[in-house]
Structure formats: C-alpha cells, structure tokens
Length: 380
Image 1 (cartoon, rainbow, N blue to C red):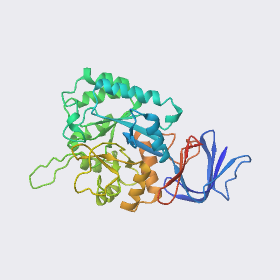
Image 2 (cartoon, helix red, strand yellow; image 1 turned 120 degrees about the vertical axis):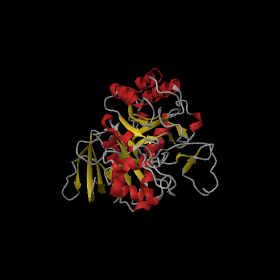
Image 3 (cartoon, one colour; image 1 turned 90 degrees about the horizontal axis):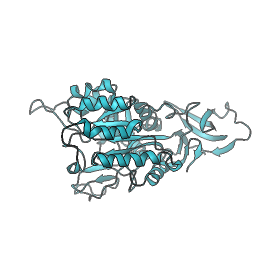
C-alpha cells in the first residue's frame, strides 16, 4: 500500500487541502483530510509537499509524442505523454492513409497495448476516413475523397473493432449514415465526432441518435454555410455550441492560435464545466513557420503553411487554458480528465473516488507536472 500525504486533493468540483490518498492494488482505497483519514500501518509514504494531486489526464486525441508518431514508435510516444501526466491516451490515426495502411497502423497499436511500456494507450481515435476533403492539414494527400462504399471501409472498421473509441466524420458526406450504422454494428459502444466538416446543424443532429456526441477540435477545420451574403451562417461550430449533449474538444496553445482566447472564454461560457474537453492533438509536421507567426513554438504547420496541430501534452494545454480563461486548477482537471472519460465511456478513472484506478498527477499551481502514477505505480 501507498499513502500520498501533505496533498491538496483536486476533486471534481472542489479541493481538499492537507489531504491524504491511500493506494491499494492499483486503486484508490481511501482519501480525505489528514486529520480524519488514518494511514494504515506499513504504508509507503509519499510526501506531496503541499502540491496538487489530481486524477491522471485523459487525452482522447493525439497523433504523435514529440517528434515520434504513435504508429511508428508507440513506446516512445506513450512515454512522452506519460511524462506529461497523461495516464490514458487515444492515439489518433489521420485520413491520409489508405485502407491497407490503416489496417497496418491499427495492428501496430493493438500489439502495443499489450506492452506494459504502453500502459496508457486505451484505444484509438479514428480521425477519418470520411471527412470533408476541403478541410484539414495535408488535405491534398487525402485518399478518401471518392464515394463512400462498404467494400472500401468495412475492412478498416472490422480491423479497428472495439479499439475505435471515436470515429470522426463529416455528416454532409453522401451515404455517411450507412457507414455509421456499420461502425455501430461492429462496435456498439463507439462514439462519433463531427470534424473537418461544413455540415448543417440538421445533418449533425440526424446522427446524434447513433452516438455523435463530440466536436473534433472545436472551431478548427470547420466551414460556414451563409444563408445570405450579408449574414453569418450556422454550421458545425454553432451546432456543437447549441447541443448540450455534444462535447467540445479544444486545442489550447500558448498564443491562442488554434482557438482565440476570447473564443475560449465564450466556448467555456456556452458549454459549461461538463461539456468541454482539452486535447493535445499533438502532432509533428515538417512545415516551416509561415510569416506572421514569428516566435510561435508550440503550433505545428504543414508544407503549405497551414496549422497542423499542437506540439505538447495536454498538461501544457491545461496551463494555457488557465492563462487564457482564468479557469481554476479544478476546472482544467475536469476538462482534461473527468469530461473526456465521460465522453468516450471510461467509467473506471477520471476522478478521485474510492475504487477507481489510481491514475494520478502531482503538479504545482501552474500545472507543472512533478510526479505521475499509473495504476498506482509511480512513473515519474
């Protein structure tokens, strides 16, 4: 058994100062104030020195780990994110691969999940295949711009099986409903996300009964449908904001380039505390930083100079969110742990509660990660 003492415990909606947390058999056995929570004899004592102890971070959307792709070196990519406090991660596979390559990468990640070094991989985030070819980085390499046909996608959907926790799609694509039905049949618990899309709210809402409940990197790579030349149209971003049952993913870089800080504050106000998800969308691309972005170090660009993702872990996004919006450390832990778990269906983690996995992060007031525990084992 282990006991983390002298901790400020970060709960779902409050703090417990001078706290203690007991770990037994990889789970949270007990927690509370030190004055009222006895520490069992023989416990290994870990002094948090007054730092914050919160649930391990859950990143449902990350392509790479630093400069290494999950699909080429899952061990190194997993380590990179674990060091940053991410105890659960869904590696993302982008639309640029053909069916054979998709299946190869899925197999790589499936095998990686049996490796203890990849203990934080919990499934796959399928960012594709059928998104709108007008949107997204590296879109000139998209091989999925033709008709949606079962003979093309079924081998990939079957290979992904229950590892596919999320399928990202554009609801405006013709015959997309058949794809959704087949994906749901193969994995009844799968979630769908609207992304790289210019769908109308009605097209998006038509897929919600099948499990569409996420907006991929909200306000990025989405279109607009103006009804009149002089009026702003309603499209993906408005539908995500309007529908209470849709979680909004958000990339939060240091300069507010993916999502302007004012927009971040607006999204937070609209979606509330329980429908906002921080993701890293961690990517590596070899494009040069285009004019106008001088000094930007945590945004990745593709060869055409378009934004291609974030260079960092979700813990860094938490710190940026605090800076840009004034969110508290309780809030950002919720955005990066509890909320993503609820969005994709993980019920055994995501908060400090008895019986849940002892996935924990120890950090300071600016979310600088000091220690990480995965299933009760200290990894940093």
